Image 1: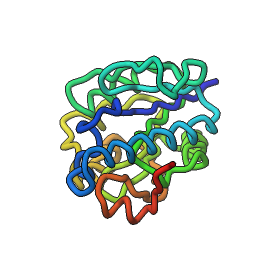
Image 2: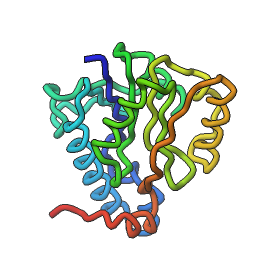
Image 3: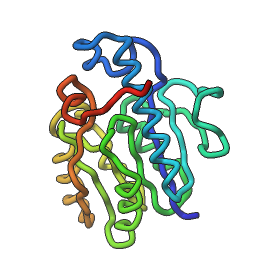
Length: 196
């Protein structure tokens, strides 16, 4: 298997996830939304043909729903999101590498499969999010320049990534735009339902 799916997750701790959503719905409901997003992300990831790496933000959770039979568990390392992603890409040995987060209830397994296929002809595959960031990034050779000194969590991330890719003469494939669920408006727009 020459394909690696890297999944970045936050440890589901009350008050530490979906903080913008929590401002409108409260910390407990925001945590429930995030737990459902984790469940959804796990389900679509398991449908993808790739070696699956799960990178936790803080520490490995041994007894959660992500079994070691299906996911190689690791901890993110680096001073900011860019360094953590760059390090994760460098750590996996498979030729084709795709990274996703756990904030996108519109993401389908076929989007991830499509990203892997596009890496046959493109240097970089990127899925733009509605907030100006991206929900997916795929590459073969690690492009560290895409991550250094980026203003993360701003509406400029996607465009700045494209600018840097162009400067590096990379062939880029842009996927469909999806909603990253961060706010009450995003929750309503995606129609994401909480499980029972």
